[in-house]
Length: 238
Image 1 (cartoon, rainbow, N blue to C red):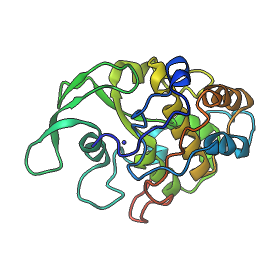
Image 2 (spheres, one colour):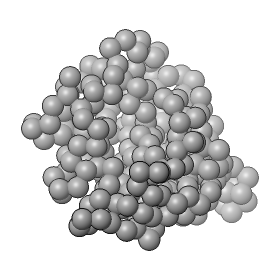
Image 3 (cartoon, rainbow, N blue to C red):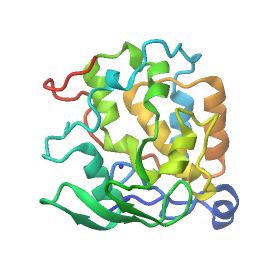
């Protein structure tokens, strides 16, 4: 979180137009090719554990480590890694890490074209599964290094329109979906992939919302890849 190295495949073009599954709209996955389709995402949803939302008590961003830690040890922070992946026409300063300019063309959440300029940016890096949501659905019980891994996993990160991202807050699929309906299948599939990978649960309402979106695109593919689920021991969190 090129912008996207996997492609969303819709079973039927008519369904794609009507329900929000567009070819080429799998942005925000981890980069590697996704697993095969044929209902795999719906199967993954059905396998997710269902529980009530735990209290938000004790949550803070610091519980997931310092923002944009270089957990993959490539000498670039996670934010710049995702900007390099998701923006077009990228320009740097001081090497090949610090992104100073690029085009989000288009933003997956709103469908708009947005110009990124460092220091005056209209682009955010979103956690597709919000960290607060993860905290309330299992992450509060994890070791710190697993929380740090989730916060910096490219599978869970995507460059998006800042205003759309801030409207999302820490919503799950039951309370927020991208305004651009053509991206909803890919968005929900990524949430499913992240929750499956990290062993997070869903609420009953969230599960129903995921199934409603994905039933309309049964051949939606499940993103895969990303970083290991444990960050290196040198990284610390509260």
